[in-house]
Amino acid sequence: MRTPDQNAELALLLEVAGTPKPGNVDRHRDLPDLRFEHFLAGAVGARPGLQSAASGAAVGPAFERAVAGMADQGGGNTQFGALLLLVPLVRAASEDLAQPILESVLEGTTVADAAAFYRAFEHVDVFVSEPPEDLEALDVHRGSEAVPTLEERGLTLLDVMDRSVPGDDVAREWVTGFERSFTAAERLAAGEGPLTARAAATFLSLLAERPDTLVVKRHGEAVAREVTDRAAELHEEGALTADSDRVESFADELVDRGVNPGTTADLVAAGLFVALEREAVEL
Amino acid sequence: MRTPDQNAELALLLEVAGTPKPGNVDRHRDLPDLRFEHFLAGAVGARPGLQSAASGAAVGPAFERAVAGMADQGGGNTQFGALLLLVPLVRAASEDLAQPILESVLEGTTVADAAAFYRAFEHVDVFVSEPPEDLEALDVHRGSEAVPTLEERGLTLLDVMDRSVPGDDVAREWVTGFERSFTAAERLAAGEGPLTARAAATFLSLLAERPDTLVVKRHGEAVAREVTDRAAELHEEGALTADSDRVESFADELVDRGVNPGTTADLVAAGLFVALEREAVEL
Image 1: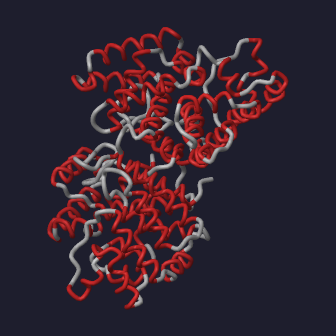
Image 2: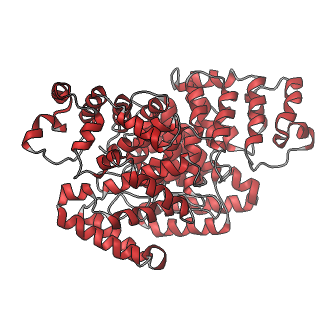
Image 3: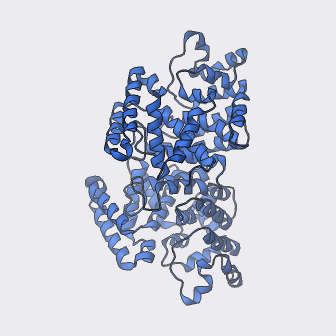
């Protein structure tokens, strides 16, 4: 019987092992400076922070600890977004992974949690858009320098997430009760075959539904929309089972173009955690 | 800075991610009922036992705990042999991973450690040969039923390992001061490129030197010798870099024949741990 922190770590490992996962590092693909092994080390490094969350620590400090451990490898940012989803899920699961408990975890976050979230950015280079002018004092690149502003305005971590929507679909999970994470878990449970194959199928189905917000930030709306349209086409045709070479080519093409739908991968990791924790999938 | 138990877990993950690793589950190959994801879950499950060893727990109980956690997944025995190497290494590393300390850990094992080792077999189906008649009372299949005999004869875990040599090259590490594990670590450190590629190269070099004892037990001396001869040929020709398709075909062929040089993989995991712990490799 795995603990919530073990299931969270396993979710990170299964997520990166899913293949083909167009545009991302997967069991069959490395990026030039970001390799499969960096994700393995990131998952192992995140564990003490995940254990904190499972022991009932506050979300912000547990997240900061998880990120600091995750970032202690040479590939840079491997799982920042996934941890921002997993930490509150693990915290809820330490009681019970039910919607009302998860919501009380999110609503219970404080200004101190928000401050820890900002400090987490000092451990790792995360790609984020420039903030609008009125939010410049809260630019995450400021790291702990933003803390006085957070305190002055009394912003909790949930408030910070709320201000990142729309535009960031990890933050969107926080304000929608982790809607797509739970959807992902249902799809994983309903799937067939190895969990890594289900993770790949779930990734494609999520990418087909909404443009990936990391791709929007890095490459613009048009590219993100094109990627989603092509994922939708492959998904509707059942290409993963019927014509997997087409999905493999799409995956190779996105890797070549440097287009990484990383937010969608984060959602898959969250879905894997929910499915494992609820024993909706066997492993 | 990773702890010894984190490095041990990462070693298990990097080992299975190495490819091509002829005959074994690797980043590119599953066996029919034993998949990559089972090894991921095995590594995550082993962690509490590895943490016990890092906290200074006795080797036998830490090993039993690691095996029980490792076996809590549907693939069966994924990393029994690797854990039998990693647990004393982690225990030594909790002080210092130096040869004299490792030897004092091994020599300090007791009858209680041997009893825990026997109990570990109750958690998982491990392939072992039938024992000779005079050792029948100590057949590991007896699990905890063998404990009275262990106590009567005053056999420590090191004594049990000593009685398994020759014939089991995991046990051989215990009586040679982990000779080949340290050799593997040196090769990993001297290698180039991603650690997963170095793991594959180290696997081939070890397989080329001595017939794999798990293959001997399952398929006999002749098959084990043939596998080693072919590995030696590929290794001497530098086929992994010069003609990797030949190694890939050899890997596919062994998987098809059900020939799994699992003991050699265990040695690679131990070597990865030593290399990570000594910071002889970067990740």
